[in-house]
Image (cartoon, rainbow, N blue to C red; front, side, top):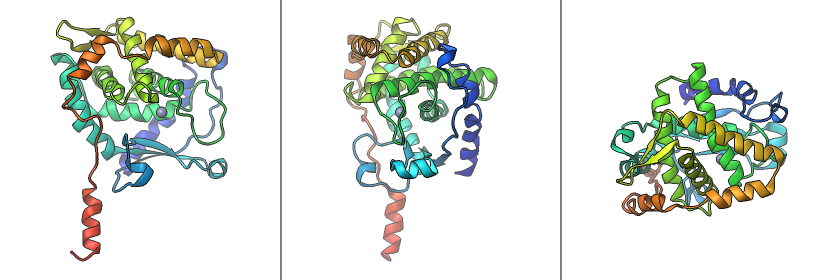
Length: 290
Ligand SMILES: [Zn+2]
């Protein structure tokens, strides 16, 4: 999709600006980011094998072959229709249970999609393990990409690169998506990382739990809390402190009772989508002359 792809490449030109503002010791910032992998937005027509089991992938960075990566670099692919399906079939029903009635109104596809993109881009910013080729999908890497992605979107909203309207939907959509990810389990990198963020932002007063068990965003506190948590994670990464990282994950990477009560009420909502490839089916049928 050329139009969407062009829109997204605007973010690419903001990455050095974001890196220069990362909430961390300035010495740890990368003064010259390397060339960026191109970003494309595509619709999935068909996937199979590794691409079509367990949690359906919404974005990826390929190839994994280190020799090709060293020569040609990688390409980031955003699977828009997969993300749209996850949004409609999972995130909206999750928000109907997890969020307060007022916050439910502020769950939208644009911030969901844009945060996934920003997550992918933020893997390349700030301190990270030196590694040729394939990225590490450790909890800490996912945690860094998630929370700093949220931080980055707020910076781009403030700068006017992203429409101000997204400021209203960004955090409520993120909150609903935290429940979506935690359902993958806290022994999975994204799920554990999201549990850490949810608990930490609850502790900082950015999210609140009402008497009826629903969650909501405190608009006055959330941006500051996200910056504070981003600073904490980036600082741990820059220091390379294994002990601090482990302590944080052990303390916050858990499902608290108030979160579990929401998860219990989500039994009728699917954990993820199981796509049926209608277009591919039609094409195959046509090919077989039916
Ligand atoms: Zn990631």
